[in-house]
Amino acid sequence: MSTSTMPEASAKKAEKPHTYGNYINGRQVKAETGETFASYNPAKTDEVIGYFAASTPKDVKDAVDAAAKAFPAWKRTPAPHRAEILLKAAHLLESRKEELAQTMTREMGKVIKEARGDVQEAIDMAKYMAGEGRRLVGQTVPSELPHKFAMSVRQPIGVVGLITPWNFPVAIPSWKTLPALVAGNTVVIKPASDTPLCALMFVEILNEAGLPPGVLNLVTGSGSKVGNALVEDSRVHAISLTGSCEVGKKVAGRCGELMKKISCELGGKNAICVMEDADIDLALEGALWGAFGTAGQRCTAASRVIVHKARYEEFCTKFKKATEALKLGYGLDESVQVGPVVNQGQLDTVKMYVEIGKKEGAKLLCGGNALTEGVFAKGFFHEPTVFCDVKPSMRIAQEEIFGPVTCIIPVENFEEALEVANGTDFGLSLSMYTKDVNRAFMAMEDLESGIVYINAPTIGAEIQLPFGGVKQTGNGHREAGTACIDFFTEWKSIYVDYSGRLQKAQIDTDELVAKAE
Ligand code: NAD
Image (cartoon, rainbow, N blue to C red; front, side, top):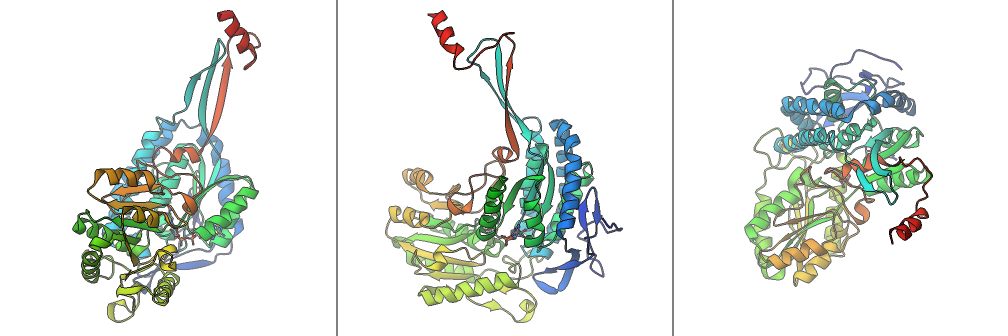
């Protein structure tokens, strides 16, 4: 493994962009080949954020070696002690919140207020998981036999591999890393290639908080090389992946063949339903935030707005006006509301879906163009775009676009709203705006998604509740809340027989019942 003195990951803008390494066994190291790739500012592509290790399977092996070596001691470290390190990390994250947020805006484009929220989510998660160090609850249950004790305990899995996307570059790594660590696993994380600096800063902060070398490692590089090598390594016992359905299905399929535990958090086609009795201005504000926050690049983005016909014209008119008033630009400007999309590929996808929408016969209410002039010339900017008169079966209403595009769909009544909301392959986040308490509860019961909001948009999850989706959005696991611990632990059931004789479960019990009679 080649080593070199490399700068600590930092937001400070250097005159010349720094070169960073992987983070293995407590320090940065170069990739085996010495090759690097660049991370760019999507608002100003002439600004290179830094150069990062273009790793190979050999680099992944080095990281897994370190994690496997660190596992026995970390597993034996009492969970409350592991949690102390997480609490210290929470305080370090707090002290570096602004620096991390600014790095995030520069590295992936989300506006600064949202970037601060992203870091705050990691701080919240660190504090919450620090508390988990004194819980990690198991069960004690009565045995059917006398003088026999029955209990279950949670145990760490071993080395776990975490594969993360770019849209929540600190929050999502934190959702995975912190429960994995408090439960006693050691970790190799492979972040998205659009946001390696955010991930490296997060990993260095956790190590600074006191993690022993090798407990948390990071390897940067392509999904097909690095992600794949992580999946293939037999010492990695579980993979937790957040990303697209395409990648999720591929990785989950391979993990199935390898009998490896796999958690997938994938795409969404979320909807806000606006009923005839809704507070229209509240719904409008929510739909605007849900559709165009993070330039529509949230897994929970409101990419469909389903509106009762009685309020349809009013909603469309007001929504167009509000969308056109949004301020686009570089997210470090506090007054900017919508930043760029993350890269050229994402911009091309958005442009492609705008053309598909037009061809399908949806009406373009506003937007529809990439911005290429003046301050937008060097970035990946696209106007916030709204289609109306959208039919539920259209591709723009069925497929995840992951950009600043939303579809307004008219419906006749509440029942049709539920049917349209549920009528996609995804099931992450659905929302209902109504003042009718009966309808609100019916929506909570019948909306087919992992997350339901009433009178609030599809975005805005808090870390103390489980996060994840049904149908094609996921494979049944949850992040955050206490539920996240389930994925990162194995149950061990323990029976202690202190009767001093052989007792046979299910057999001796008949005798016991007879004796009692
Ligand atoms: P992506 O699927 O392109 O990449 C996700 C990660 O997988 C990246 O780190 C990538 O390098 C890696 N990867 C790619 N190919 C791989 C392979 N063959 N083997 C192993 N790893 C591989 O997704 P993205 O563009 O980074 O993120 C956007 C997607 O993530 C959207 O679909 C969005 O809905 C989804 N997302 C879901 C949630 C959720 O919780 N449900 C949250 C955020 C984002």
